[in-house]
Length: 326
Image (cartoon, helix red, strand yellow):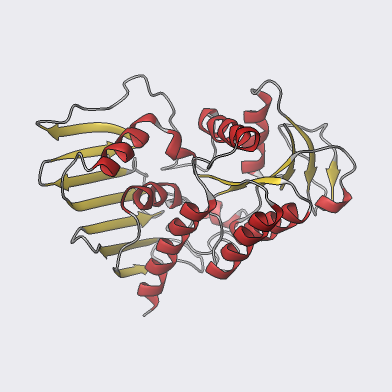
């Protein structure tokens, strides 16, 4: 497929490097209001908006800051183009609903780059939960204790703000981990949360914790931070009446069930040091998201990270913020 990519920042270059490794796929144009070129594709022509593009393209990759994702999705749908958007789907419920409706009306595929869903251990655990094989899960505790220095937040005016970033680590750095949490367990019926700004000069939170109560009785916790120096691997601990397991950065690191074999994949290699850096050096998981997207466009079906489940992830994050505000 031929892609037009909206945005020329850090994450745009991740997609450019990923697609460069995929035979038969290419980026034929990029959109930049500032006129900047992709570092990973300096020869790719630049246009001020989608309507100005004169080269052929089949689909759009939205790689702008969080608060501009839905704007880019709707613009792509109006052109009748399939869309992959960087996470999160959006930072407001009404905007996400408008974006989904625009793609459905245009009959185009909309996928979200929650690439941690492609990790084999995550997929194996998801399947076991759906089958009920792990028993009655009563506790699920996620700790996404990351670190960013002040220079990171000073690198762009929108970083750490509410109108564009949509929040601090809950909406930004920990969104991938919270997506896996919501993918596994769905939305809670009650949220109680506290957060604050402790070590950075920024508008949004840089550390917080949420307590979640589910309709089946499960009690969950989520901690998200960019203040916990030096930054730690994300850790998910899950307990049921049959046993427990721990996942560290998408890999099963502990498994304690008597009647369910450990489904962990020891060959899993993807690692992104999201605890300390925004840079993605290994693009293999992005390639899986793109390949899955192309499969769905060609054959039909639902993307690994479809828009409705991605909306649920943002909805959970917004509920956490709403509880903190009240």
